[in-house]
Image 1: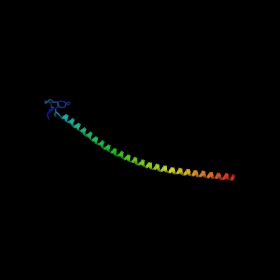
Image 2: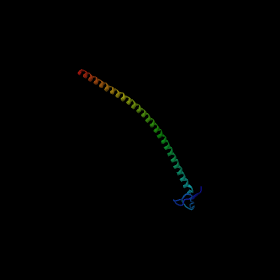
Image 3: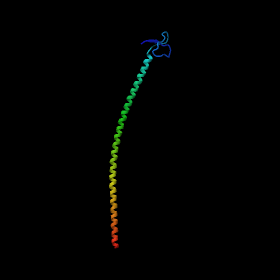
Image 4: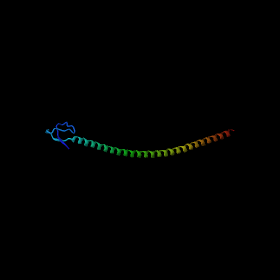
Length: 119
């Protein structure tokens, strides 16, 4: 790399500096090299951020699938319980209707007996 003396603090990259200056020597492409290093560091940070986001995305995807499976399991359990409750209420209703029917028959027979006695 070519060297040149630093003339002032505002040096533009790749600019030939005054060789008579008493300030220190710098490489002409030093600023360009530093910019390249910074850009590469930003790229690496971006890539590590992308890796972190991918890991987080995979983790969230696994959690979502676990929650879906749990939801499906709970829905099946609910369907079973609802069907059991439906059967329970259906038979209770049939039993109640049977009791009402028996009671009506009993009342009817009693009324028939009374009417027969009146005759």
